[in-house]
Structures are given as structure tokens and as C-alpha cells.
Length: 353
Image (tube, rainbow, N blue to C red; front, side):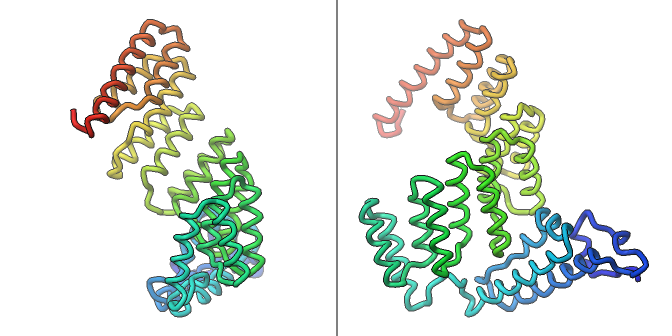
């Protein structure tokens, strides 16, 4: 009657025991949550027995996105069963389902290298031969997906590989997300994220970072910030790329304190900021009519011993010029020109001063 659950229930925030009390004891939602909690231990046990190379969808199960999915409807509890089934399928012989057998693995790798090195026209012809002979696997499709000129071509190729029974992997999904982002299709990129989660492929830090970047480019700052919090909640190790994406996101939204806080977090995590980390701050201060702060960022970069590139100089010059600091902007142009000459001279001497 009190719906006592396993300790896993504590990992599902937003749902309490009060949801399960009533005339019938456990509500449908509580039974759903209890089912998820129990199934999580089943997945864990099967992950251990499957070996180190088996696909493990547990991060997806515990992600905030999955919490909301489970809380929506008790019928969604079929999802963990799907994940368990896929985990079993991929762990046979400790080898993912899309990976070739040991006899064909060397040939698959050779063909993948060939595809990457071939010119575009030859690559397409060779890939078609692989398709006709039934030898095209997920690695070949992923390689071809990365060479697609637009998201429409990439989506069509993804549909084709699924039609012939080749299941996409993490690299395939990430590539498709990036294609949608380049075409300004943030909503379609999010749909790809939902699809990969539903298919039992756990997103990684590259997946989330790409989604955040796409939302930022489309000025959907609230959604991007929510996705950043979700990435942090997953417990995935964050890298320089992810932090730079987050700093840029906050700067695009003119959220100065959040941008500064993110830089402090990455420093505390042992990840040193780069010039590219600070450049969005300069652009933000330019929009906020704070040229003095833009100059302060430039001095901060210099104090850290980081090399200042042309893009960063141009950002500061723009911040100064747009806010009436013409003399200071002209002076900085001279500094930038001198720095470029020194870099070119150093490059001509093979890196020696």
C-alpha cells in the first residue's frame, strides 16, 4: 500500500510516494516508475555479463529527458524493455550488432579507409558496389553520411540504411545532427536526438554539445540553456568543446554572469580556457556597449599567455569602433598588424624566433 521501491527510485526525481497513494494503493504512474526501477537492475546485470564491449544504455535511462518520458504515461514503460532487448542483441559474442564478424572486420576497415581517401565521384561508385554486394555496414554509411553536402541528402541516406537493416550508431546520429545544425534545422536535430534515445543509443557529450550549438544559432536560448543543464545532469565528462559551446551560448543571450561562471567551472574541472573561450565574451560586451570590458578580456587573454588570433583582435576592434572608441580601435589595428608580421616571420623561420 505504501509502494516501497528499490533504491533506484531515488534516482528518478520529480516523482514521490504521494503519487501512488489512493484507494487502489499504487497508481498506474507509480507502477510504471517501479517497473523502471526494477528493470534498471536487470539492465545492469546483463551489462556485466555481456562483457566490456557491449552497448550499455543506462545513461539514457537515468537522463532527465527519460524521467519526463516515463512520467508522461505509464505505457511508456515499454521503453526499458526495448532497451534491454537491444542490449541483449548487441552483446552477443561481445560484439555490436552493426559490427562485422571477425572474418570480415579487416575488409570492412580497409573499405572504410578507401571511402575516406577517395575523391567524391569514386567514393560514390565504390559505395554503390558495397551496397549491391550487401557488404555496406554502419561504418561505410557513416562515412558517406559525413560527405553529404546538405541535411536532406544525409537524412535520405539514413533512411536508406535503416530500410536495408543497417542500424545507425552513435557516430551516425551525431553526424546527422551536425548536418541539420549547419542547415539551421535545430528542431530536426532534436528529433534525431529523440530517435537515437528511443533506439537505445545513448547520447554522448558531442551529441548534446551539437544540439546546444544548433539551438544557440537559432536564437533559442532558453532551450539551449535547458539542454546544457540536462547535459550536466547526465554525469558525462565535459570537455573543452562542450564548455566553449556553453560559454558561447550564454554570451549570445547576453548572460554575462552565467558565461563567467561556466569559465570558472571549466577551470575548476582542470580544463584550461583557450582564446576561443573568451572571444564570445568580447562580442557580447560589444553588443552591450561595454568596450572597456572587451579590452579587459583582451588583457586577461594576454595575462594567461594565450596567443591572440586575428578573429579576437577583430572582435575587440569592432567593440571599440562601434562604441565610439575610434582612436583606441586604430591603435589596436597597429598592434594586430605587428603581431601578424611577427607570426609570419616566425613561421618562415620554421617556428624559431
